Length: 168
Image 1: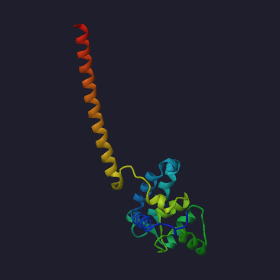
Image 2: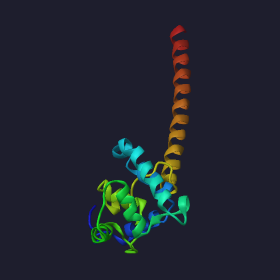
Image 3: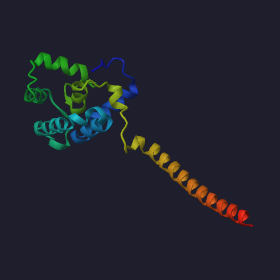
């Protein structure tokens, strides 16, 4: 994952908000945002999510990040055993708030080489951020469909008038 030094404050803030969501919601954000490339990894991503929940000894499914000790166990469960020094170095690359904990979204970005801005700004089909645009597009589509129906009615009426004129 790209270094976090060149990340805008807006993207950093958004990413940090995302990492405060529950594990399942972090996984959904990632999958929705990167479905084209993540579809083949969806099963693995849900396994990672389940493992995070299992290892979160205090909050379980309501948690959002693992402490350093449990992050170490998570990586070991994937065969990515690291020394404490190696783990801290890895966490420094993705841990924006430098709290020594690993959110699921931080891990997914690191594993699949996604930047903070890419992740923070990943389009989310029906997310609140995009809902206004989706609603506006749906309204435009409805207006176009109504206009099309009106035009088809007028065309039919004109054809009928044309046929009457030809007959006369």
